[in-house]
Image (cartoon, rainbow, N blue to C red; front, side, top):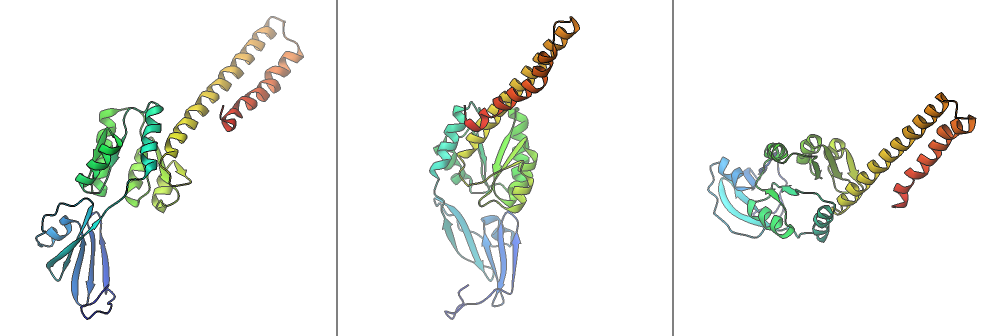
Length: 250
């Protein structure tokens, strides 16, 4: 951190305030850096600002010093992810963000999301998610990578963590982990899961059907040892070959 004399000064203490920012003591002065709520909680008036990004307000020694604008670039993979999920028939796609409501609205509009909320603290995210889940119904899938996403990953029917940059807590709370950080792979996960479930039911139906048929034939004296072998080993072999279609993508 730059000092008044042009050098650097290390903070004596740094405290993270969840959902708002950080508080540090530098050269005997209290430095606050975070959102407007952080400064207002310390009784410091914040200058209203309209900017196309996340605002980090800074106060030094109890006086407002200025702000920084942090702007994210929307990844092209995000649009592909939404399109892929729409193609699979996913009816509701939403976003819960701790970013400013204006920024969240811009992203949601550009992606064509059905539900979105911004300016959410960690606890607000979980409450918003539970409210929307109860309102919409159906199976919920939540994708996240941050520490604050861990409760939502655990609360969703299926939680998917981004493995590349995901926090350890998010990875541990999730049901599955995406090895990369490409959000468009979520659609691939859903497609693979659906196909796997279809093949599993095919195998169950086929195996039980053949065994039931051979059992009835045996009761009427129409089944030989070869039918019994087919109902056991043959059915297992055919079920294994059918399951391999998941790897072949067919």
